[in-house]
Length: 424
Image 1 (cartoon, one colour):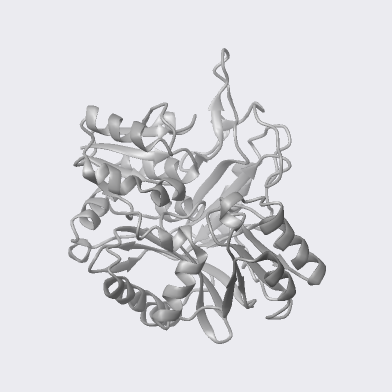
Image 2 (tube, one colour):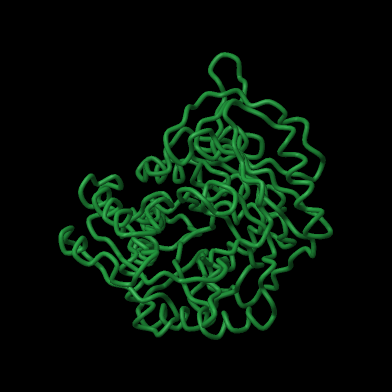
């Protein structure tokens, strides 16, 4: 089987790495890929959002399956376009992709199907929103409705911060069209966690639990990022909690998909707040989370290509997905200045010095012209991911190996793998 993976981040590297272990897979392409992905797949110089180019390549190269990594091409309808060309696609269609592309779409879905979530109100008029700041008290959660690369959420601690966020989103339009509509939510307290689920039209099957870290600095301080690290399984999940999430959130979500005609096929990422009132949905994403995928796929003991096939064919219920008992921890090495402005092209050293069994998933890397050296090309650069027989062992291995790698301005959080308590 020939598989085309679309994307260029750490998530796509982890997916390609796992697919390369499958006996079903003869060839992996990745568009556009990165310097690390080039070690397990043939990178193709086509942008992830060049839907016409990707469709053309898939047809010309007789690709059997396309796996879509990032949210933007999904929201643009890449699944629909490839399907029309006869290519089997792992990833939801454009209609289903509104679950991530529009916060208001998701909040309305959750409310309609009585799925636990924070109270909310949506605004399209800046002055109306400015007049309403503090409607749920402080901290105040302010979200750009559309896609903003994981950075469109502001937790405003006071009125001044709230008004500044509104002016930036709806006035200065720092997130472009994504801020044309803004969703304001009740602030939830508790422990954040996430669950990735394989979904077809008949079934929803949760993967092993994970926890990620959104803020850039230790102690969950600083601005939101795309994710500074992750670990799996989550320290806060219990069998009782997992059953409650299945009964109160996952199964009602699947039923809601069916009732609303959302023929979802792919991965549903469920962002959760484990509050005193029980688990509540913070957000849905339509694809593997990054960097949760790096930790979760390290623990997958089944054939990923076989799972993708089952989802596409609506046969997810027919397969038994197995997981390793070890813990995985992923520490993200980021460029100095991220998630704000940062420099690219910094030479990375120490990549060959990591221990066997520790994977370095590349998120923002490229080959330097001329020298062929691997250099930084993004905000999140690498995800150092280690397995351990215990949580503490995996954490120690991840950090020990992270310390062997360096590039100018490199930054990482030192508290990845500790319980990420967001309560004030």
